[in-house]
Length: 143
Image (cartoon, rainbow, N blue to C red; front, side, top):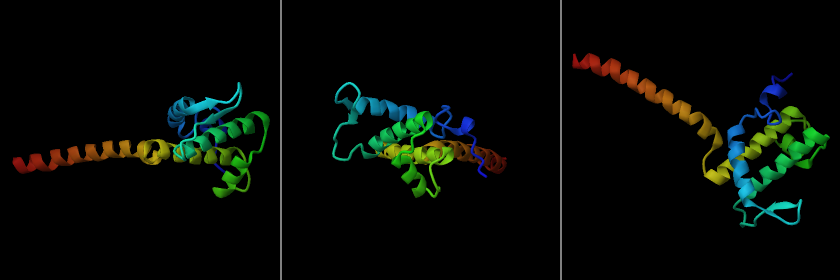
Protein backbone atom coordinates (compact mmCIF):
# COMPACT_ATOMS: atom_id res chain seq x y z
CA UNK A 1 0.00 0.00 0.00
CA UNK A 2 1.23 3.48 -0.82
CA UNK A 3 1.65 6.43 1.54
CA UNK A 4 -0.03 8.73 -0.99
CA UNK A 5 -2.64 11.02 0.59
CA UNK A 6 -4.82 12.61 -2.09
CA UNK A 7 -6.04 15.50 0.07
CA UNK A 8 -2.52 16.35 1.21
CA UNK A 9 -0.48 15.80 -1.97
CA UNK A 10 -2.60 16.46 -5.05
CA UNK A 11 -2.74 19.32 -7.50
CA UNK A 12 -6.51 18.86 -7.47
CA UNK A 13 -6.49 20.10 -3.85
CA UNK A 14 -3.84 22.74 -4.71
CA UNK A 15 -1.21 20.93 -2.63
CA UNK A 16 0.89 19.32 -5.37
CA UNK A 17 4.63 18.77 -5.14
CA UNK A 18 5.46 21.63 -7.54
CA UNK A 19 2.49 23.93 -6.94
CA UNK A 20 4.55 27.15 -7.14
CA UNK A 21 6.20 26.06 -10.38
CA UNK A 22 2.80 25.21 -11.89
CA UNK A 23 1.54 28.72 -11.15
CA UNK A 24 4.54 30.24 -12.94
CA UNK A 25 4.25 27.85 -15.88
CA UNK A 26 0.52 28.66 -16.13
CA UNK A 27 1.41 32.31 -16.69
CA UNK A 28 3.77 31.31 -19.50
CA UNK A 29 1.12 29.03 -21.01
CA UNK A 30 -1.48 31.82 -20.88
CA UNK A 31 0.98 34.18 -22.55
CA UNK A 32 1.80 31.68 -25.34
CA UNK A 33 -1.75 30.51 -26.14
CA UNK A 34 -3.53 31.52 -29.30
CA UNK A 35 -7.23 30.89 -29.78
CA UNK A 36 -8.66 29.32 -32.90
CA UNK A 37 -12.32 30.01 -32.24
CA UNK A 38 -14.00 30.63 -28.90
CA UNK A 39 -13.02 27.34 -27.23
CA UNK A 40 -10.06 25.90 -29.09
CA UNK A 41 -6.68 27.01 -27.77
CA UNK A 42 -3.24 25.91 -28.92
CA UNK A 43 0.36 26.94 -28.47
CA UNK A 44 2.21 28.99 -31.06
CA UNK A 45 4.44 27.03 -33.38
CA UNK A 46 7.96 27.79 -32.29
CA UNK A 47 9.79 24.90 -33.94
CA UNK A 48 9.82 22.80 -30.80
CA UNK A 49 10.72 25.60 -28.40
CA UNK A 50 7.64 25.02 -26.23
CA UNK A 51 7.22 21.28 -26.81
CA UNK A 52 7.17 20.28 -23.13
CA UNK A 53 5.07 23.30 -22.18
CA UNK A 54 2.42 22.18 -24.67
CA UNK A 55 2.60 18.63 -23.30
CA UNK A 56 2.07 20.04 -19.79
CA UNK A 57 -0.95 22.02 -20.99
CA UNK A 58 -2.49 18.90 -22.50
CA UNK A 59 -1.64 16.83 -19.42
CA UNK A 60 -3.32 19.41 -17.19
CA UNK A 61 -6.44 19.17 -19.35
CA UNK A 62 -6.32 15.35 -19.11
CA UNK A 63 -5.79 15.65 -15.33
CA UNK A 64 -8.91 17.80 -15.04
CA UNK A 65 -10.91 15.35 -17.16
CA UNK A 66 -9.61 12.42 -15.05
CA UNK A 67 -10.77 13.95 -11.77
CA UNK A 68 -13.87 15.78 -12.95
CA UNK A 69 -15.30 13.34 -15.52
CA UNK A 70 -13.47 10.09 -14.81
CA UNK A 71 -11.91 9.97 -18.29
CA UNK A 72 -8.82 7.80 -18.82
CA UNK A 73 -6.67 9.80 -21.23
CA UNK A 74 -3.83 8.09 -23.05
CA UNK A 75 -1.56 10.90 -21.82
CA UNK A 76 -2.10 9.71 -18.26
CA UNK A 77 -2.26 5.95 -18.86
CA UNK A 78 0.84 5.85 -21.07
CA UNK A 79 2.65 8.23 -18.74
CA UNK A 80 1.77 6.08 -15.73
CA UNK A 81 3.07 2.93 -17.44
CA UNK A 82 6.25 4.78 -18.45
CA UNK A 83 6.82 5.65 -14.78
CA UNK A 84 6.27 2.03 -13.68
CA UNK A 85 2.63 2.11 -12.59
CA UNK A 86 0.16 -0.54 -13.74
CA UNK A 87 -2.60 1.90 -14.68
CA UNK A 88 -3.75 5.47 -14.14
CA UNK A 89 -4.96 6.13 -10.60
CA UNK A 90 -4.63 9.07 -8.20
CA UNK A 91 -0.99 8.49 -7.28
CA UNK A 92 0.21 7.69 -10.79
CA UNK A 93 -1.63 10.67 -12.28
CA UNK A 94 0.14 12.97 -9.81
CA UNK A 95 3.49 11.39 -10.75
CA UNK A 96 2.77 11.90 -14.47
CA UNK A 97 1.92 15.55 -13.86
CA UNK A 98 5.10 15.99 -11.79
CA UNK A 99 7.10 14.53 -14.69
CA UNK A 100 5.48 16.91 -17.20
CA UNK A 101 6.05 19.90 -14.88
CA UNK A 102 9.74 19.03 -14.43
CA UNK A 103 10.23 18.76 -18.20
CA UNK A 104 8.40 22.03 -18.93
CA UNK A 105 10.31 23.85 -16.19
CA UNK A 106 13.65 22.68 -17.56
CA UNK A 107 12.61 23.67 -21.09
CA UNK A 108 11.51 27.17 -20.06
CA UNK A 109 14.20 28.03 -17.49
CA UNK A 110 17.12 25.80 -18.41
CA UNK A 111 17.29 24.62 -14.79
CA UNK A 112 16.38 21.34 -13.15
CA UNK A 113 13.27 21.89 -11.01
CA UNK A 114 14.45 19.47 -8.33
CA UNK A 115 17.70 21.45 -8.06
CA UNK A 116 15.85 24.76 -7.91
CA UNK A 117 13.78 23.50 -5.00
CA UNK A 118 16.44 21.53 -3.08
CA UNK A 119 19.63 23.47 -3.77
CA UNK A 120 18.68 26.78 -2.09
CA UNK A 121 18.09 24.91 1.17
CA UNK A 122 21.29 22.94 0.71
CA UNK A 123 23.28 26.10 -0.03
CA UNK A 124 21.90 27.81 3.06
CA UNK A 125 22.90 24.81 5.18
CA UNK A 126 26.40 24.73 3.64
CA UNK A 127 26.84 28.47 4.25
CA UNK A 128 25.66 28.11 7.84
CA UNK A 129 28.04 25.19 8.49
CA UNK A 130 30.89 27.11 6.86
CA UNK A 131 30.25 30.12 9.11
CA UNK A 132 30.18 27.91 12.21
CA UNK A 133 33.38 26.18 11.08
CA UNK A 134 35.10 29.53 10.54
CA UNK A 135 34.00 30.86 13.93
CA UNK A 136 35.13 27.77 15.81
CA UNK A 137 38.47 27.15 14.12
CA UNK A 138 39.68 30.64 13.21
CA UNK A 139 38.83 32.23 16.55
CA UNK A 140 40.77 29.50 18.37
CA UNK A 141 43.81 29.96 16.13
CA UNK A 142 43.79 33.76 16.58
CA UNK A 143 43.84 33.48 20.37
